[in-house]
Image (cartoon, rainbow, N blue to C red; front, side, top):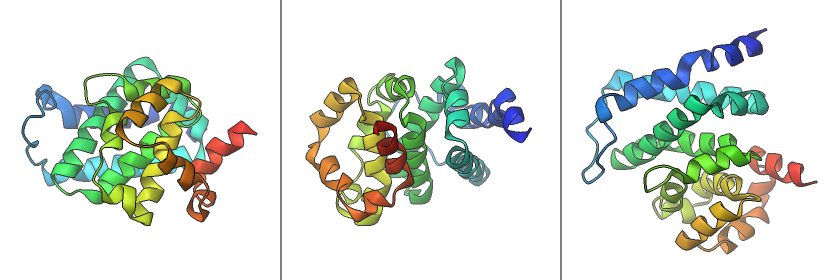
Length: 197
């Protein structure tokens, strides 16, 4: 009954709540300067909302994806992800940044419509922002294990997204990652791979 309630209430309104808190009054219109710091309570709500979504998506991927894929919610989710990817890098909010990266991966896992969402919208798109994260996400094993499953998820069986990604980096990085022990223990990678069997 809880799952049907979450579906009916669009995940208890968490995405729309976060969208309203983060992006009211056109806060994300210009990116020529760093975003102003968010109040601590807004950051706390963002963190707790992402934590809740991450727990829900790991327990019931198809339900959460179907809610997040609905017309208005998918656009709100894309705007939230885009804004937080930018904000967290500018303000060194590493834990929240890592949560957002992971959520984007589950959002797109084996879901072509959601994959299209992350390459759409104003530039840089969510996918382009992921491909241009700081160097340590491409060199440190712990951070690669957060980013690379998400990049794989965004591009799996999606030529358009793969072409966008390979303009920014070599696909060989992803291929090499898939062969590692870390990939074998990644829940997200296993979801993607099991769908191919």
